[in-house]
Image (cartoon, rainbow, N blue to C red):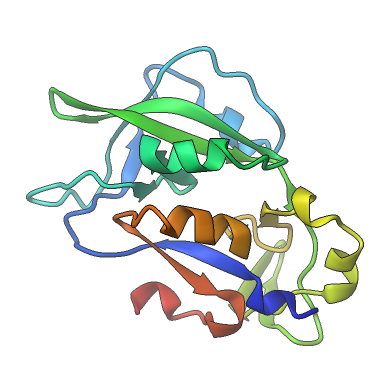
Amino acid sequence: MNYDEQYYFGMRSGSDNYPLLDWNEDHYDTTEFDRLEPIEVDVLLNLIVGPPEPDHPEFVDFHKLPMPVFHKRIYDVLKNIDIKGIQLFEAQIWEGEITHPDYYIMNVFNVISCMSHENSKYEEKGMSTFIDKLSLDERVLDKIPEDERLIFILEEDYGKYLFHQRVVDAIMAINPKGIRFTRIDQWGIGSAFD
């Protein structure tokens, strides 16, 4: 089975008015989200518009923190799928004195080491791996039931969130704004700028 055709990266799309986000660190110890394990959050999380701040910010269904931030429309889709290894925490985005409610930060603690070293193009520098072209190791993923790898983080590069075709299809069925998915076999280092 060719998993490079079944998995996607989720990326920002659309207008430059769709802002990047940042933490409002006055309210919560944000390092909790760096642990790659289940966490407890008992407060409404506060986010702010990050740099570079657009002149006319538009708040859409998907933003980056760098972890994914989804509007309730996508949250509702994800809650209807039994996705192992993720948590969704309620947040609001502050734009000056205005708040935008109904957002959810995704914490992913499902981490899988499955980069094909033979078929990927990458460079290791110290403890970091820079991937130019990714291919997934079928031998590894064949051993993990599909329901346990619908969304995961690539262990070789913690910034890479992978979404299975089932999840992508469910999200795209609601015509979300601000997100696009690029299949692994069509992704390259410049894909974020396409």
